[in-house]
Image (cartoon, rainbow, N blue to C red; front, top):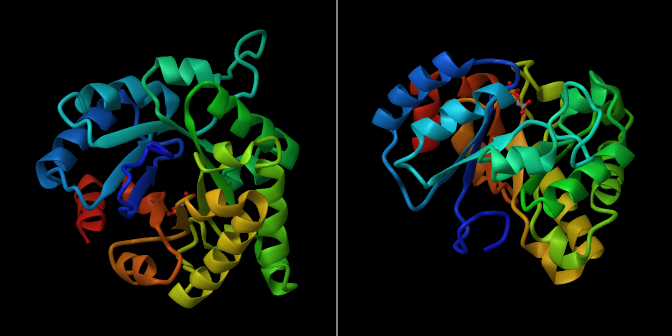
Length: 256
Ligand code: PGA
């Protein structure tokens, strides 16, 4: 097993709830969602709830080991005087299997640097969590033709401390910043071009191991556009924010 995924490659549907849904709302969501999504071997479904809702989500999934749960952020230190933070070992102990690292909101709202994402990726792996490393260009960078350069820089930095075998335990999410929460989605062709470039870079970083990581697309994915994005070359799944907050809508996306 790598990336916490089954050996047979199935599309990954990851829900990033951001700062939405407390424990009560999370339980209600899961009741509706589980009634509409029966276990399917050809899908991997994963939730990234707020850390304080993780236990409620885990409890709701007691009978559904097919569905995975992660945290949206971790600190790189294992413990200590870092008020307000959660570490990778704490997340693991709370039942997370995965951790988002370097989401664009962490980078651009909270000022997280490439160096910090690298430390977080390493901390996740050290604690036995599978990191989902997010990369993506801002609008001005895309307009200057720097999309690939930015993604390659973020990839190289984020994976810089890992052995090739460790690189194979990571999941990559390509999320163009201009498409996140804006209703403006990359076309399947745009997404595909970047995914193919990311795959080539992963191979150059980690050789054959670089061929094994799933690369997800994220940015205004919804029930209307998800199929075309999943069908695009190089897209192994989706990371969904806004459209994952409605249980029925998310079930429709996951079944698509
Ligand atoms: P969105 O967010 O689907 O609301 O654009 C995606 C993300 O930030 O992961």
